[in-house]
Image (cartoon, rainbow, N blue to C red; front, side):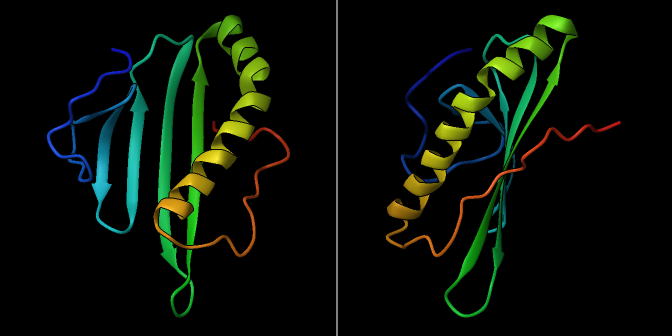
Length: 118
């Protein structure tokens, strides 16, 4: 695993395909894209994009990064890289909107504290 090139189609994805260092786990056209990391990490990472219509010619793009740490090292790793990922994820949303030839009305916003899933 790692950054790989040579997808079957330059603009269309399918389930199971590799996208950079992510694997497409679920794709629902114009609704959801779920990716899981295939890079070496001290935990398991997924990245989920959801699109919800919001009135005429408007949509909400929801980007959720999940990380389940493996042990103390995984927890420390996530705490260390979280500020960098916030910057990267904001840029990613802005890039998606720009590629769609649209504009951001408000956001992006992010959770101000960690959320624990039991």
